[in-house]
Length: 275
Length: 275
Image (tube, rainbow over all chains, first blue to last red; front, top):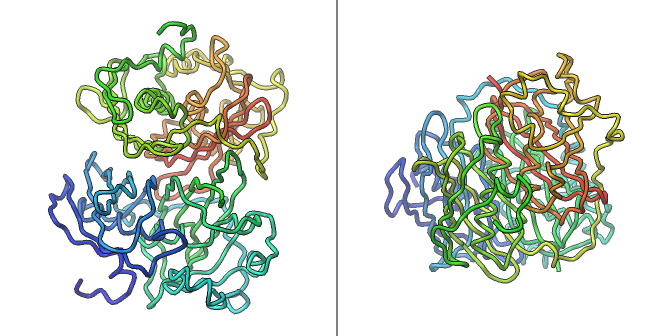
């Protein structure tokens, strides 16, 4: 891992056990206990690990454009294997199926389309509006979380997260009920965002159900992330929102905005309500 | 296909070539030329065909809850094969990988989670707002489309679609530029909506880019649909919206509302801008 100085890059690294670029392969990972949240290893972080393996399988298409992950069982810290199978590699994009396994147990099945984001047209038009976050010094840092919470969410030590003060009422028993949480975000070690780290960023805020007065772990069934542009260096703005709770499940939409004011990732997940 | 009287049910029917419930199988389909739109067979209709094969593979989990499809090449009318592989079947849900092929060429790779929607809790809370459609007699029916358009979009004969008059300006060269299209919808033959037909419904409106003044075919890269509840009988309301055009692509969100006023399906697709 020459040249890798940031914790995040070490944590998502994979080693090819056997692979044939353009066809697929098998990659070894070691899931860090540092990314635990609630009942398992964080699902967004795992997307970055899987994406790193896919990138190795289709080296001419380095960037995730769309990734869909189905979460089959909770991942635990320790060794894991990612297998990849290239479904189509032609023109400017490649589509790859990937599975993450631990001790032969399926943890995640995924499909992804990769390409070269830097080669895409730069023009963009958007009616989406960035989260209206106050300046960082007026936001509530994750370092203010109580010791006992930080002990069960070691993931919180991996990044700086500065919450919108209007979206943190749940921390003191006063959820807004609106179903929105937003925050400033950056990885530790000054590690700048890139398309693969955005896949983690879409799943690092607390479950939006906290803001509905439903605390607790909300297991993801499915999460699809679209990376819409290469992020500029600097702080990101993250926002989770939900509009529909039904059948014991809710959708959680995440937007990631970069320091240049671009919407760089959009995701939606379907998750179970906390018990 | 005993008891099947509606065109839609005949068109999505599959026959098991070889299958082992709970494990997977191979299913033969015959894609009807009636579902052609632009450069191929409609992607939502194909989701229904794939879902029908998945249902046969996990018969105790009859309903799609989440389906993610990656479109690899345009499907053409004629024979097709759907292969399924059960990734996990446990508790109340099963997750299945499926591929649709024609003459050995991969058309679609998909992942899906199936379950029993009728067994889920009925409680729902939503802040989503149904499309504000005028009464049907004030909307613009698809039967008013010019002959030459209907000739290249035979799919339009498969259903009744009554457009919001404010969202049909593109048909006369006056797109609103807002990126929204909504319509009343029902399948032919009085075929009532069900969870599998909702997978088609999320991709049957014209591309939302029509309303941005960009007519033409917008090939889907990825589409994920969440079925949030069993739809009530009667007309559906469909709405497409986009907020972000970037990198030559756009996201298209679809909502499907049933006659009882419930949000029964949500989808998002990532598609290429028309050339």
